[in-house]
Figure 1 (spheres, helix red, strand yellow):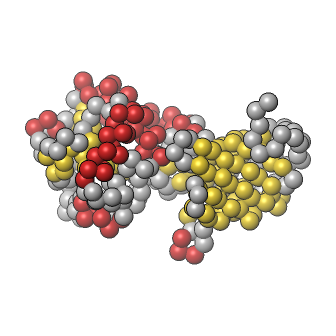
Figure 2 (figure 1 turned 135 degrees about the horizontal axis):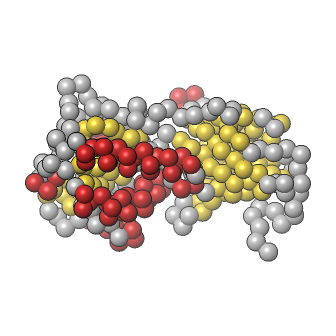
Figure 3 (figure 1 turned 90 degrees about the horizontal axis):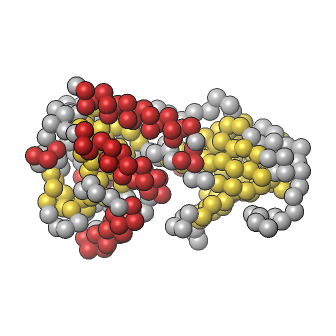
Length: 290
């Protein structure tokens, strides 16, 4: 028999199904997220936490003795969430464990109207800028520029990513199929990799593994910068800031930035994922038609 946390099936009078405002950390490190849960009669809970940069992917667990337990392991990331259920509308004393050493606190209140900031409002160009201008090195050591002929008169998607980033993985899994569909119609995609090392060879190795795993056919460039906000801002001077990974920059056929989307809500978010994909592809179609 497959089970997680406890083999005993325990019915509970509390049902956590619905939407919640969940706050991680405290003080200047507070991060407001949206939790969406579904709970069965026997206390099995599934769902995820949506954040401004994406989500915590497919979580599953249960309610047992007035405590919520949730976890996931995707092969590269292990997460554990626990929280005391004060009542049907409140979760307190939450603990979050990531991997071997990452920890945080969290608490949540039921809020069916909870929502995140508009993902298109978090990152913007600096005043006076309309275009990006960058040249970085691809995995073969060749210089690639946004101004190269292959990108002229094309709709271009710039994917800011890292091989260490789980939400970037989810976006990449979608992006490879998007590229197959739209590249013949006049769309190009460029992946800009920000690795946790400035060593070029180590970065190439990590990003090549990403490329091979997903079968990526669009160019992946090593920026030589780390994911630190100050460094990402230095690497793309036209941007006011980069607040999270992934960040997706949509450029029209004139080379002008039309929209910038922060984060990626993956398949674990259900309708949020499907709605974003539909919106993103409609935007692509509209830009191609211009």
